[in-house]
Image (cartoon, rainbow, N blue to C red; front, side, top):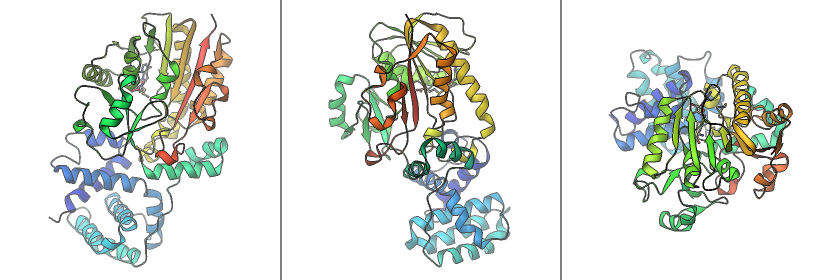
Length: 423
Ligand SMILES: C[S@@+](CC[C@H](N)C(=O)[O-])C[C@H]1O[C@@H](n2cnc3c(N)ncnc32)[C@H](O)[C@@H]1O
């Protein structure tokens, strides 16, 4: 088998699953029986890289393929064509090998072998001229509300940020050690204190991983806990806690943390993360809407389930697998969780509501509606002060977009709203 064939075959299988199964690529990659099973380390890395590169270019790849075909080919053949076109755009000097391996892939599968001549003809025609791919556009259901909220130029900048992919960000357990770990790891210190490394390193091999001196957490995802600014000894509820990045921050700040999540399987990740970092929290597996536990918390962090549309740069398959019909249900759940959080807060207590969504209905609008429903809650302007001006902190909320900090490598999209209950 040629050097790249195993990786390309796995990449095609990953592409088919990521676009057809509704499962997130990260879950498929972690599946021990999934398409990466049996591959050696370099081939796994290569398959993963090829898959991500293709998912970031599906729509422009399809536009390049379209003039050369009369009808949409079978899923496997289409996946091979998409992969090859994405590779041709990236490495035109390897056109011969890319086309020949695409043909071999199709020929070696009994279900598609008769399409090998077709694939050969299409790719030869495409590779006859330089392949330049436009930036992938978001699907209409997502693009439209974003254009309405941010304007066309900003949406284009967001789409460009999605093409670049994420950096590797770490949160240091003891913030006083930030400079020390930045030095040891050769990392940049971001405003707010996250450390930033170039992607592609093996995280578990870095110094400090084993002893839990830091954990992986996108710079934007680290901000909600910083906005909540818990003090040692405060009682804090992390209401949708798993896998636990924010629980670790709250515990590291010295708060008495109850970490609650509806998913027992995901809560295991919180348990592992606490064990690795030597931090402590009380873990509760329950539906937050029904949980009858403690009340009167000093502070609550509600990182609600959402469309996750702020994380497309790390999950490029999201626009293709998310069903917009799920959105109203998510928005209703977020609003019920906010109501529950407010009921669990003591008078004078603080609430940070956040989602890794770009959609105003899961962010700004959700917070405005909560304030209308609960006159005892007010925007906590002070809590969000000090972050960059273009993060729109005016209404007690931070709107973070993937195109922000472009010169530093961007960050995930998030909405972070800070509220306070009247005393
Ligand atoms: C965005 S994730 C939380 C990420 C987490 N805060 C972190 O920083 O690692 C949302 C979580 O909400 C949980 N969830 C969804 N519905 C819930 C409910 N009704 N009650 C409690 N947790 C819920 C999901 O299981 C999921 O783990």
